[in-house]
Structure formats: C-alpha cells, structure tokens
Image (cartoon, rainbow, N blue to C red; front, side, top):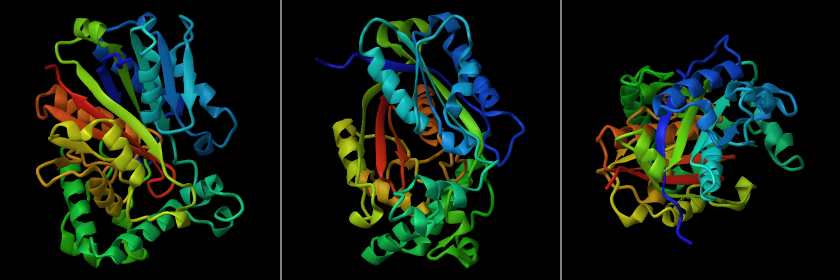
Amino acid sequence: MPATDIAIVGWAQTPAVARTDATEPQLCMQANLAAIAMAGIERSDIGFTCAGSCDYLTGGPFAFVQNLDAAGAWPPIAESHVEMDGAWALYEAWVRLQHGDIDVALVFGSGKSSPSDPAELYPQQLDPYYLEPLGLDPASIAALQARALLDTGRATERDFAEVVARSRRDARTNPNAHVRDEDDPERLLAAPYTRNPLRAHDVAPVSDGAAAVVLATARRARQLTEHPVFIRGIDHRVDVHQPGMRDLATSPSTADAARRAGLGDAPVEVAELAAISSPQELIVRDAMGLGDGVAVNPSGGPLGANPVMATGLIRIIEAARRVADGTARRAVAHATNGQALQHNLVCVLEGES
C-alpha cells in the first residue's frame, strides 16, 4: 500500500548554547509551544506525541519522563519515546500517521549536555567488553574515522578546514548557532591537533538545546498552511556496531537509506547533513552522491550548533525552512546516531507540486 502523504506544518528550535540555566523540560516546552503556534493548532488537535532524548545525558533511568511536562498534562496524550535523536522520533510519528485514524502529530528532540563530560559519558554507551574499557570518546572515534578517510587519498586536512570555514561563515547568519569563530582555512590549519589528525574546530561543539516539529496528513496540512513541506521519502539504516568491523571511510547505511528514500529520483538544491566532524561531511556527501551544485549545511550545520539528540531533527527543520521559503524546490536532511556514522536516517522534502 502506498504511503500516506505527510507534511511538516510547524517547527521551532531553541538557540544552541554551551550552557543554559533552563531545565530540559523548559527547553522542550519553549520549542513545542513555538512549533504548535506556527502550525496554528491547539494541543487538543495533536493525536500523537513522540520525543527523542538520551537518559545518559541526564544521568538517571527514565529521565525522559520529565520531558513530557513540555507536552502538557491535559488533554491526555498518546505518546512514545525513542532513546535517539529527535529525527527518529519524527520517523515514528510519520509511521503512526500512516494508520489514518489521526491527522496531526508533535515531535520533539532535546539534550542538555552541559552538566556532564562527554569524554567520560559516551564511552559508557559502547560495547562493554571491547570498546568501553578503551575510553573511546566521540572525538577519538572521529579521529580514527578521519585517519581512515585520509588514508584513502580522497581528502586532505585542507579539505577538512574548508568544510569548517564554510560552516562557520554560514553559521553567522543563523541566530540559533553556537559557534561563529575563525573561518580562515589557513589559520584553522595552523591550530594544534587535539586528536590527530583533527583539531578542536573539526569536531562539533556540544550544545544544549531542543527542537520541535508538527506533522500533518496532506489534507490537514493544506488546511493549516499555504506552504506545506511534504516528506517525499524517509528511511533509516544501520551499520555494524563495532567500528573495527567496517570501513570508516564509507557509509553504506547512509547510501542505502538515501536510495530507499528516493533521493536519486530528482535533483536537490539543499542538503542538511548531521556530520559531527568535518571528515564526516565529506563521507556523507559521497555516500549520498551530492554534487557541487548542492548547498550543504547553509545553516552552519552541526559544526555551528550541536544540541545532542536534537541535531538530526534540526537538520530536517533547516531543510524544511528552505523548501517553505522557496530557496529550494527539493531538499534532503540527514541524521545520525551511534559512533562513526553507525546509524543513519535520510529524509527527502519537497514543496507542493
């Protein structure tokens, strides 16, 4: 049976910051209320709510439950949660809307990383027998991936610096961006290594923030907005968990998800990629077959702002924004979870025909 047409009709995100005094539920509420207001609906119109977050960040079991305060206690809601980026919450809501008994869903993703140390926290999520004892933090794994890419001869450290420079220049026009610093490739290359062959700027900042999206069936979407952004294809695929058992310089799961989402059916003008390091952008671009004419991460991307567990959902928001304002007729968004591009989601967006 063909999929039901689903559109994005509202969205919002909080500014990405290094640290905030707001609680995670407060961040979620700010994003949710703004997205609902943009969609022009009442909370009682929402047939399903799905959130994406990570209990590791908060440090307590079932910590995501408190974020439901941001969805409101009344009227009663049908809800779900994914221990993943909010982009996967959007996927679940997209599937739920296929059932046909509801026509509006609310999705939100959030992360408040500032109270923790990523170098100590994230190794706890790795294989407990072989990887966790090594203390491999995200920057170290990113460096292994960068070295693998360099060894193929398909990229150089200057290519990494060019990615960072462009991302920071674009981030300057994004009011929600976290980093808008040095964007001269020569000066970036002169910075010291933090995890050879990566420098500090090659790895995305760790930000606090939240984002929300309102989805609606096509019929309801056209009632709510003159510019619905339709999800023309969405898919996610996963690679082997162990980084040592796959080629880190490629991303087969991204390529597979892109193919299944129909990315190759027509050209795209904009691509928002959830690359948490500069080498990852090059790997994902290659996996998705993006040509030179595609504007990649015009928002500044994760190298400009990285609210963990909302970064992928924000890529969908940023791509949808450019379709809605007419900058792009067709756009693609990418999200990733796990180490070194282990799990990837691709979402193709289009305006009304």
